[in-house]
Image (cartoon, rainbow, N blue to C red):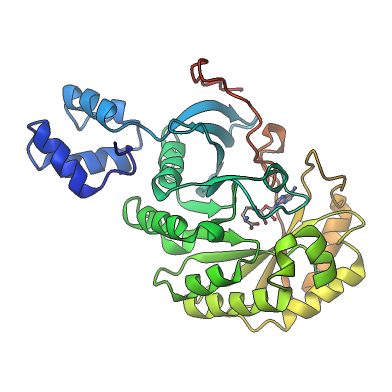
Length: 354
Ligand code: SAH
């Protein structure tokens, strides 16, 4: 059976025939699914009886285990459970007056094992398919007063380790939801073959590279994949993507007190990135480490973080400090990890914490 956001045009046509519905309903259904910004049950452009039938025929891939909204109402985090096999993933919606961004998961769990990341600590469960990625975005948009303008692949998982499904979801977010390619950001820990494939794609999506260290010794301790794809190779592949897409690349740097935040380390980072030939130059995003259960590190204090950003800028490298959103609801970077065991005979419930 197809899921609601995985159904092909062809299958939908067949379904309409079995339901004795005219073919023009196909376009109305697409409209209901992708443009109305309400759940299918409430899409009033379709007759009620047809909606009820479709809700049964085209089930959602995920049931909602929990939904939690931050105190300021701007950040919502969902924990979803696959109806097929119970795999759990998380999705976050972040709103500001000018944009609504959805942070999606590309895998249930992650095999990259970055030591400071909650998902990495939990290990790999399975890849998500494109329909499951698209469903996260569409459902985050339901009830959101703004249109979803941005999608970042920064939830659970390594998107480039699930290349085909990730890319299929990118194309669908672009065509079905009309999200501009440059507002689709793929974040990678440095899966070089995936980055090289990305450089060959026609849609100029934005790339973010999780760097976290200025040298291979330290990076290999934090990011095990670095043993396979060291910094120079990652930077070369990022140059290719920047050139092919004509887009500036962001380098993410989780700042861990006493580990990667010494002035000399930041100077080394500046030397590395100032010499990086990518189009538009490098942009560094300093992220204060979010605490996770199995990593003893602490975040770089705010004042020191500001000094590091100034130091990078003085050395000629663009730098910003990432605002950590959703810390009060555990939705910040690297904290996405399903941790609410759900029993099968316990029906999915939705809780909104004000
Ligand atoms: N696997 C991809 C995407 C998911 S992680 C990647 O690594 O880029 C999204 C971002 O959150 C990455 O930059 C990641 O390094 C960062 N991150 C992970 N754990 C974190 C933590 N505990 N504190 C701050 N940032 C973290």
